[in-house]
Amino acid sequence: MKVLVIGGAGYIGSHAVRLLNRSGHDATVLDSLVLGHAEAVPAASLTVGDLSSVDFLTELLVRDSIEAVMHFAAFASVPESVIEPAKYYENNLIGTIHLLEAMRRTGVSRLVFSSTCATYGIPESVPITEETAQRPINPYGFTKLACERAMADYSRAYGLGFVALRYFNASGAAEDGSIGEDHDPETHLIPIALQAALGKRDHIAIYGNDYPTPDGTCIRDYIHVDDLAEAHRLTLERIEPGAGRYYNVGTGRGFSVREVIESARRVTGRPIPAVEKPRRPGDPPALVAAADLLRRNTGWAPRYTEIDAIVASAWRWHSKHPEGYA
Ligand code: UFG
Image (tube, rainbow, N blue to C red):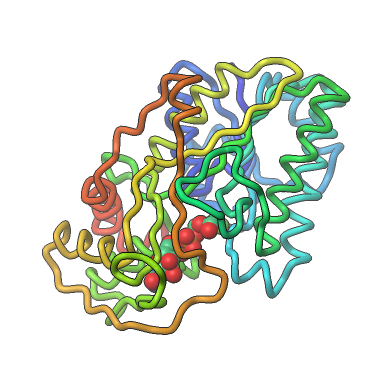
């Protein structure tokens, strides 16, 4: 299929582009390069632009004879979304509406959308199934939930076929270490631990040691970026016209902050000093996916289920590219 990958030069998008091209699809990338990196995608496939104009998006869909869209482009920092909600509503929600409009105009009716476990807020119980109530606790989660609702309405009214993939914690890097995670500023646990291993930080902070979890630190479900990419490919190939599907994408296993830092010490063989700090606002104690629905409906299964294997793949990227793409 000719697939437009919006946000394809970003962390998850770039892994999806590579997988699509290796699986016989033809990926075209649209990326504003505000957060994405041109080096992460084949130069010939990249168009630089954003989601601010329906006309521009319409022309692009026609120009490249696009048959399906994967939409990764979003701002995804929870604390930033609290301080600057306008930026999140503008880019994440209004941008997505522009895309839906362009797809409606051109009759492109297959969409895979990057949603998030942040749409669940603080879940009543863990593991989280797709039926768990969605009660986001920050603007980021609200914008993604609003996009899910908009897609459902476009589906009913105009026949859009879509899949919303609710990611848990995307992590790791391509097996050969050639593309990976490069955020500025970096806020995520694994890259920060590895930057400390590289000596780029003198320590890592552990945000909160008094959570109701076995070791007092937050538990997350770390899902490898190539397993996420595979979930995109499998669901893309199964989109039904006029129907929407929602899937959690996680391994079903949770690891605490302390366990992840221990893993980073094992994998790198380096000390990684850790300093216990107060809780970070907005962090739910535990987020772990029940991802059986995706397995059942598509045959998907994560290849990376051990935290050491995930951290080792990230380490290959970070140790080869200590300055990221720069
Ligand atoms: N953490 C630390 N020290 C750090 C960085 C993180 O202790 O230096 C902790 C966090 O407090 C949290 C855990 O490590 O408990 C994971 O934090 P990340 O920032 O790596 O990931 P989040 O779980 O906060 O964020 C992810 C996605 C978001 C999404 C969110 C949903 O990156 O896009 O899950 O809760 F919104």
